[in-house]
Amino acid sequence: MARKNSPTISQAELYPPPDEPTRDELDDARVLDLDVEQESPFLRGQKRVSVRRGSLPKKTATRLTWAAVALVVVVLSGIAVGALYHYGERSWRFRVESSDDIETAGLENVSRAQVMEVMGGDIGRNIFFVPLAQRKTQLEQIPWVESASVMRFVPNRLKVEIHERTPVAFARVGSRILLIDSGGTLMELPGAGKKKYSFPVILGMNPGEPLSTRAPRMKIYNDLVSQLDSSGAHYSQDLSEVDLSDLDDVKVTANNPQGEVLVHLGSSNYLERYKIYVAHVQEWRQQFDKLESVDLRYDRQIIVNPDLHGAVKPAPLSVSAAKAAMAAGVKPAALITHAVVGPKPLPPPVVVPGKVAVKPAASKKVVKSSHHKAAVKKAKGKNSAPPKTVVQAKATPPPSPAVKSSVALATKPAADAGKTKKPSPAITKGQDHP
Image (cartoon, rainbow, N blue to C red; front, top):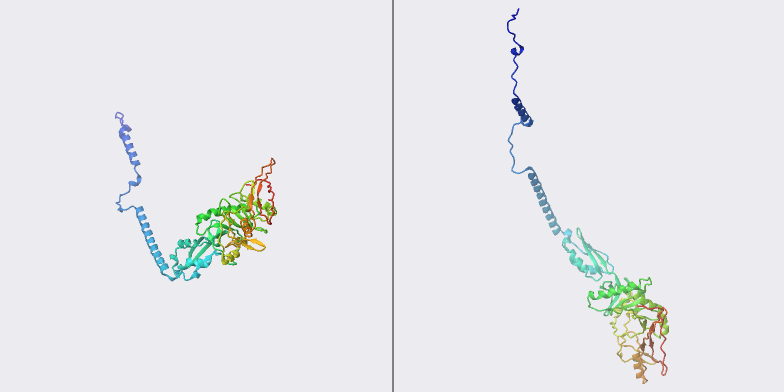
């Protein structure tokens, strides 16, 4: 039996609890644990190993490698090109052997001989040494050539393409008749039977004058033709000559079965003035014995058969030039050399029994004038009749809308002694024309 008086040992005394840490020690341990957890777990088991690094970064080394490769390629390419150039320079395969290796295109009025005069020096030359730009400039100096192009084709061919000028009229320059384009460039007539044109002949072109002088005249001619053909009547085809010697007075020679008529059109409104001529030409032929010229430059009056003071007499054509002009389509009326009628008396007339005719030197047309008739009558011992005069009578416009304009009247000397022909009545126009 246990003794009751002995003290009892409690469980707490037999197994004493461990000492509990203080609050401060627990807080410090937590802080340490948190600091350990923030460290990367991959660094705990790693061992630092020393790495040997180069002097250049990896990207820079890659770029240098590609640059070296590119440089090698360029050098090899240069060597190849140099070898090809040397081969092309020395090889006979690239030489223009003959004129058969020079091809031409677009030739109509330009002959192949004219082209070969420019390109012939390149025969036997290496094709790569032919100066194409220089040959183009030389070809464009041919009058008929408006533009040219020169191309090379490997191994040894050249091709020349020509674009020719378009003529718009004939031009009488000195004792020759040439073709002329809208800009004023003169061109030789085509070969016989090659091509014919239906153009009037332009007068007033002087030999040796520059292109800058002919260009303004051609501008007026282009305007004249444009106006005459604008209504669809194609009046320009009725003209055999266009005189541009005076830019303020454009004169045209109109073809007519009864004889050519010189028409003064002034410097503007060519179509309206030419329509007046077309409308009244038959009436004037019935009223006057001979209709040679009409002046339509003035408002409300028309002058019939005016004197041609200061007219330029072109040089006569040679037989060969006349034949070439007719073969090219020049109208026969434009080939006649007309005499000048002026205030001064002409050389003494040639009197033929039964008729009176005057034939001045170097003239191919018989001209009759008042001065000649007076000289003839004086030679015969008769009293000379007064010369032919032109009367300009201005009519007063009536109240009606229609305006009547007077026409210059021509009186003719008496054909027989003691007889005098009265002047014809004034021609009435329906309206004013500028």
